[in-house]
Picture (cartoon, rainbow, N blue to C red):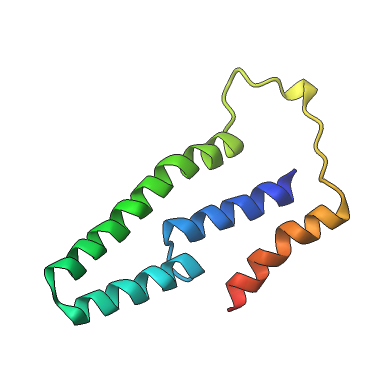
Length: 102
């Protein structure tokens, strides 16, 4: 399921807040507004944004890494590459395209 895994990886990167993806833009706007506010609560909010990005990376990055590099004990002989049906592919890709162009 290469296409499915690719869309999952892009969605994960967006949630981390990688630049040029929607997650980064929203985190950037929130952090900029907090910096302009200048209160201690606003700075705590920036810390919460950074913490949430780190926690998100902590639980989604291993899935991406294990999908790309399954390990030496993985049985490649039994591997059958296939994609889900067209309807599922369209539903998987279209939200990513909409959010990437927004």
